[in-house]
Amino acid sequence: ILNVEQSPQSLHVQEGDSTNFTCSFPSSNFYALHWYRWETAKSPEALFVMTLNGDEKKKGRISATLNTKEGYSYLYIKGSQPEDSATYLCAFRGNTPLVFGKGTRLSVIA
Amino acid sequence: NAGVTQTPKFQVLKTGQSMTLQCAQDMNHEYMSWYRQDPGMGLRLIHYSVGAGITDQGEVPNGYNVSRSTTEDFPLRLLSAAPSQTSVYFCASSAGQAIQPQHFGDGTRLSIL
Image 1 (cartoon, rainbow over the protein chains, first blue to last red):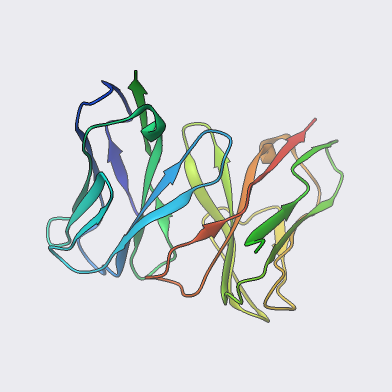
Image 2: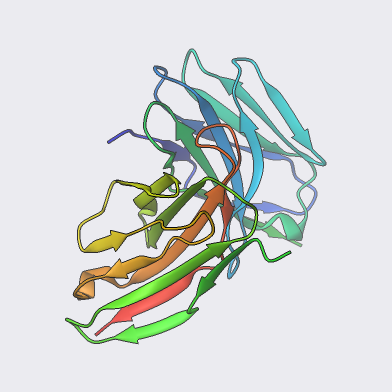
């Protein structure tokens, strides 16, 4: 079973702070790295799907980078807002179906 | 535009009972999958399908059965419910296996007594 690690497990930030978290995955047999945002009592929603080493994607205040050679991706949130509070999941696609990390739970305090 | 629809939203079963969790999508997606979500465990793949008539096992398939007779529907059957199957179940679909994002249903919260 592939290991997809996310860190930190949880974090609390003040409104307006910028933050980032990490997803680590195997550096071999890479096809894609997915990021999802999962709000409490809802279902996960896709943020980004990244396929190329060095990829950078951006959606509003959220951006992500990808390093397939060393097996990590960073998710950045600039100027965190209370509505950013959610669990952020990454998922690795190699030569087996998507494997999800356990997520980073972000709480933004107003 | 319904997306991925799961029914029921909640269910309580007794040990040994069987039931089917329904999943339907209206996006003409070929790829569908079932996950379970348990505290501290993240989303774990139960079964998946790459198209009508084709299914395969994921990480935790034991105790579950699936079929894919149409593109739209991908039901998950619990053959003889056990307390260890108490979980939240999510169905997802995508246009492809690797680089297309997954679209999730709202989940089914299942308790086995």
